[in-house]
Length: 224
Image 1 (cartoon, rainbow, N blue to C red):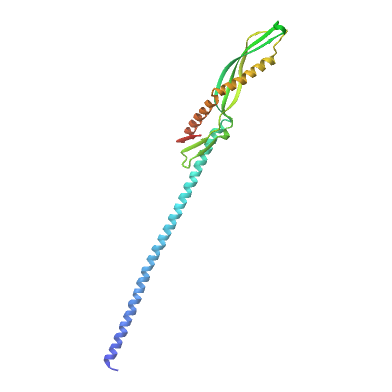
Image 2: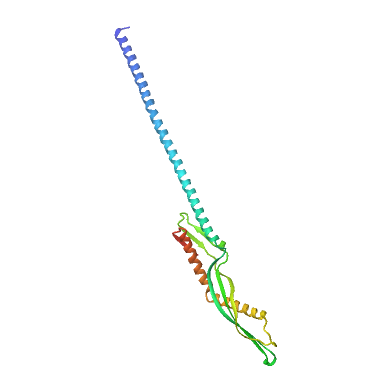
């Protein structure tokens, strides 16, 4: 073999070794570079998962806090309403005169009693459990469904005989006097309702509830 052929063979071998060495070095560099990239990707993924977890926790946390606040609002309203079994919004005093007269045969004997009495009519919401509040999600507004007012009572406060004349032939009994007062009391209740007693009670009930809800911290109060 000629000398120049040997030199060429050695030169090719040297070039191939350098090429392999360069490729090996490049692989090492790429591999070394991939490690920080993987770590960076893992850090990014971990950070993203952490943010998602924190976001979900914050969302559900806020939701739970909101639910607790709303529950407290409802409890405060309920306590406010439970203070009275019935919501008496109007008390009206009135006075009436009852005249009871009796005559004997041919009008020979006569008796009469004139009784003056005073009564107190009460109107309002009979059952406060029928009052239905709805609180907004932000807890700033409340809407209240209010039942119509009713006549809750009509009691006799006092009574006295204003004038009387009695005959032993046509006596007036206490039962007749009480029956006359009862009839007058029922008529007075009908008249008061016709004159707008229940409408006044509705308006007063709305005013009372509006003031109560405002005192509880609600910014907007709607009553229907």
